[in-house]
Image (cartoon, rainbow, N blue to C red):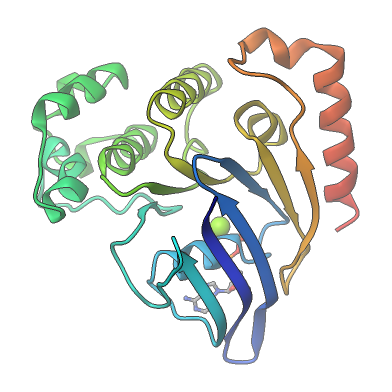
Length: 244
Ligand code: ADP
Ligand code: MG
């Protein structure tokens, strides 16, 4: 069943045409990644879905309801973690839940523990490194109760090992609760490892130029990344991206 649908979206900033007649659909419980050149409009797409921006033309629908310009109907982790400086880390990760009237500090503490942030529960954002802030913003998005989660390059500031831990953790959470996830990354491996489907965007104005269905069964183990078939898939997507 289609949960999120973007139909004929157009968006300009003054004379800068960023999206032109962009359409795609995401099914309920699906994990979809978007890959595209930098500056192609990926974050703009998320700002539109999150209701922070309004499209000039076109429709965004969530479970059949038009949500153009409407905030709060999806869970959104923006590219730059927007933690509130006057709230502690625990208070920050609970924000999405508080807004919907059901804070669960116990689960939040468990998640902070898994992400290695237990010692920072009562710290303020300025006391954290970039990677720690990113993990806190990630947890906030996961805890937020909406059925659709947008993650804009959520692991870009993490070292390789932490990134891999977070990827595995995300897959665990996803397979347990089956939220619908739309994920932006620059990392082809990450997109293949995590997703059911990958959308390749053209450079500005962005359009979906190719779509890959990831052929690997789940659960996926880290060893998959070293297999021949994985590398072949990576190469195919790399070529598609290079042609943009
Ligand atoms: P990506 O996330 O794919 O790197 P963005 O969506 O951030 O790309 O940006 C796409 C284009 O839109 C760029 O040319 C950028 O300068 C422009 N843009 C994005 N947000 C704004 C904004 N709020 N005001 C003006 N221009 C913007
Ligand atoms: Mg971006």
